Image 1 (cartoon, rainbow, N blue to C red):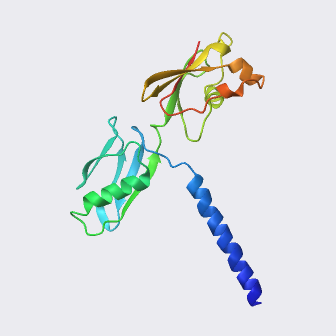
Image 2 (image 1 turned 45 degrees about the vertical axis):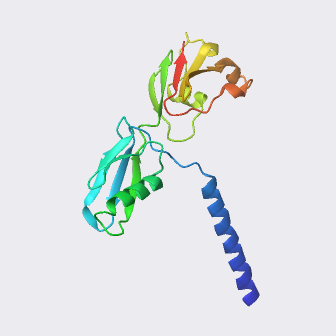
Length: 186
């Protein structure tokens, strides 16, 4: 019987270790302007507030003031707020919950059935975004589709060979989209 228990404990330890490694491999969501967060401080009733990240990438929270959060994870925002609140509250326990990801969107323009913004609630490719936009209309030129992406070096134009993608050729143009990308369908 003790041997069975030790095998079970080893198995549980392996499962827990695998779960931790899987969590470490997940990409952490980074806040963008337009996103919403719920910030609360444990045992401080007056310090619970839903806040939208402003266009400049900041939020304002009572006692902490203005804080730049664009590009940070919720855990990083919790730490920064706790540091700022420590001046007023001993050992503050801050919780930041992402309640809206409106800042994580791409724009589909041109000859699609439903042009407009598409929210990236999961990793999304150009084909998936075009599908969410209702697909191409009958006058669209699938081989002239372009993605305009803003990078630190300026704008980048990425070609999409839609007709080839539908045939299973040249899958390299089925680009993984990033927030802020614009898909142009002529």
